[in-house]
Image (cartoon, rainbow, N blue to C red; front, side, top):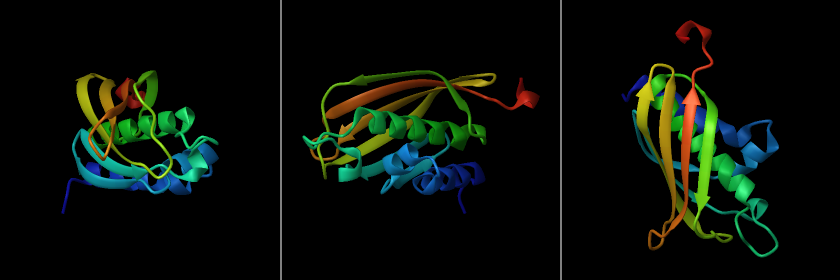
Length: 146
């Protein structure tokens, strides 16, 4: 059996596709966890028509939501709790189109006391072209850790 924190993190991420928050549910629907360990998660995702515009481009808001959630799952797998984003930056380099498969990889790159840094990379599955890079700082909202 795997690490309990990693398993809880994966279950939390999978549960988001049935969330009552419509944008979050649509943004994570169909997400597949491919690999996960403490502080790291890799997922595959196919851009659906529910999250693309009339030109077939992946909505930036839906992409940002997915980047935030996968980054949070990587932090959760290490910290054992869902943390809140306190700084979130995304650089977008190219578009992803309707029915295009992408890979999202998040890894924790720093941790100090109650704050954790995670780097999230979104690439086209075919060819590996970088679509977006996310940098995120997350803090514990657990008052016993403050």
